[in-house]
Image 1 (cartoon, protein in one colour):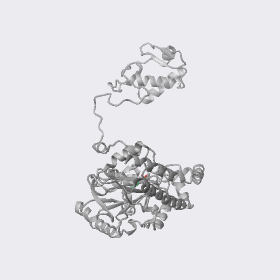
Image 2 (image 1 turned 180 degrees about the horizontal axis):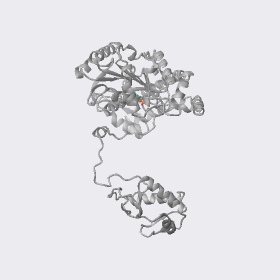
Image 3 (image 1 turned 60 degrees about the horizontal axis):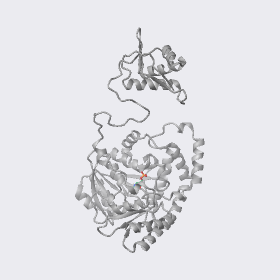
Image 4 (image 1 turned 90 degrees about the vertical axis):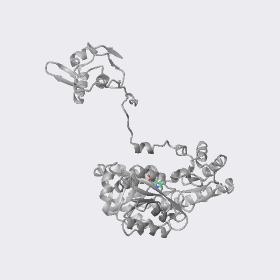
Length: 489
Ligand SMILES: Cc1ncc(COP(=O)(O)O)c(C=O)c1O
């Protein structure tokens, strides 16, 4: 380490053994000294020649450091005055800068955060903090066809044409949208073509884009009670006012929705497999909902997140397929049918509002990874996707049976099961008066990630429960975890 005091500079510390080039060490030192107030605006600095001499180094790194500092506006030259610290550098930034991130609240000045963000801020609950059995929404990652997937990723990573490596279309890669439109038409009864498919970074983004494109701040929106917390968060993030509308065994209670807010701007629903109760919305309610939306000019946001996994009978056709007034925004995801870290979802958008959706999407993350859109296109087209879903359906049936049997064996009828006909999760209602949050906390300490049902309600429910995501847990894990859970009850 050389420590030389250049005539009127504070000591310049250079470390010859560090891997950082000399010119960078010097320019860093000047930056810190200027921002830290040790060198003042207008103050002269030594010429490159004399600084190099003082520091006993070649002139080259000094020249290069000064050049960089001129380019960044820290130094300037005046004829006759030589090189000086730029006059325009504001004084008062007295904190010393080092390589560590600055600590907040060094000054007394306020550090405002939006009221909306503050109101939404919540620490992550313990049942989301561990990777134990029963995490809601996790598919069977241990059965994902990794070999096929890695071949497809390799294929596209090697051969990706340069024109696809540039910025992509915000709406998504056309062949991928065509594949999605065809799949939705065949399997989900969605009526659309590729021009209506907007590819998103997961369905959470689809929900936020829909809310931003369609809703003014303070717009009233019907939300299923209980409902998906992610949707509530997406709606709240644009300042919407949530109107909780109860769900019964026919799905969302439309008459009650109309009673609570006839003129709501939108309704969020998961009609094929209600989250979290697992109810399928009846045909009567579907028609009532579509009629209300058409009469009052409201939008319906249909979240169809896992209905491929109907374990008995055929998948329920989408609400979008019944809509004759183009009121339904259909939001889907590959998180459950492929894997969540893929972050690919889609929104089926009515034609007239697509421009609004596109400009919102463009202003967000512009577009989703083209590489994975290419990979998914082949995954669907080559039949791997349909095969994977078929295999997972059988596997989830097996896991569901193991879960129901374990609950039956260890809980002796103390839990009432609902919503076990479809998807990858079910709800076990607790005896009245039992605190589901306390049980989920205790379970999390044992490494079991059951989610409390009450967290899906806006108002405290009459009866608490536990949501078991069984898709991602093996039969052995299911049995062991139910034994652990028994001790928490
Ligand atoms: C109701 C519902 N919608 C959507 C999603 C999926 O979200 P994403 O596509 O952002 O992973 C989930 C995941 O758990 C969900 O439960």
